[in-house]
Image (tube, rainbow, N blue to C red; front, side, top):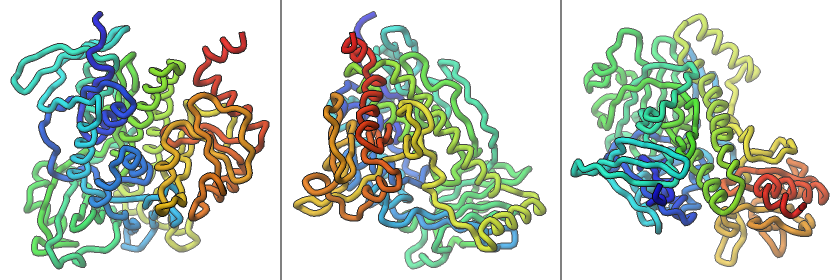
Length: 514
């Protein structure tokens, strides 16, 4: 076969595809990204981000472009069958562990447009809109794609690897015969987006809510600015298409708002699914985002999960290109698949409680939640719902913080405090607690960072407190900011670095031993 015309082809130019293209272009790959649509969809779909994703955007140089289109995600108050408060879902308090507000709402069209601009401006990235993938044929050396342009002409293209970010109805997944595993959640809902009229800001509640009413469960979210969203469960016998008509929508919303206070922006019926691909990789083809998984939206993690996928995959593709063990790519499916399954299980548990339609069971749910809080509504944070990585390219020595996100404090700098990533970069980092002795040698490609005078001086003590909680003097951090492993003292640190080098470059280690 001829050499690949592109190192990597990305199918789909939504948030996951655009982020993948930008990350891969920055890593030095030649990238072709295609999408059959020619413009960003101008209505909101995803509405929630978290601090991990904003950190990723900042790493891409996008934070300043994205932040004007965001707002803090207000606490979500859950109300029971009798209208009583039965739970609050909040975000962790300051000082924030990753430097940014931990939970945010956002407006997808301008954020997606900013992602596309960034990807298209990245050297090595070519964007073809109005282009459809009509056939895919992987082989041992690469992948042959058949692309149909806006003029209807078809032409083949070779790529070394393919990342399919082409959505829930993914052509790539179906063409390769990869099935979805059903994680057993399937409910019909109507999603309604409103724009409040000027001066009507107080026409609706000022905090987000889950109305866990067995007669008809409803979710309410405060979006940025004048954007408000309702997600309304459809009942047996209701026609989804009929229920998304404007007169039907206003009848459903009459309890909270009238057309005098808000303008209907979008109404769309969905089935809230819990699905995960049985395979995330078929040779040189990888699935990501909605092509690989779908989850109910009860804590707003759908888009976040897709961006975690591509952030995980991009650094591994670069590492293998640069000589790391090719088996590193096998960890993509294990890490992301388990993370998706665990988080989806937690979301399903919340969704089952929200969606309970039996009045007796709903009353029992309410009583159980209040009992859990000692007679008051219990409080949980969105951050504790999102799990760490549980398997994959992690140190073999167990530690509670292994696989968790490494904190990002504000660091003192001559021009004022800056976030740590802007000083430390995003490669492999060995971070030492204040006073910890450095190792005798570092593995190639690992940057050494020290807390304290002469090193990183943090403003709020986030990292110092983290190291104290973990009983550690050092953490080895991956390019996607997850903790590979930790060490409590010098000998353990040397062993940690040896295990890391043996995992990432086993052939080099074998040659060194020989």
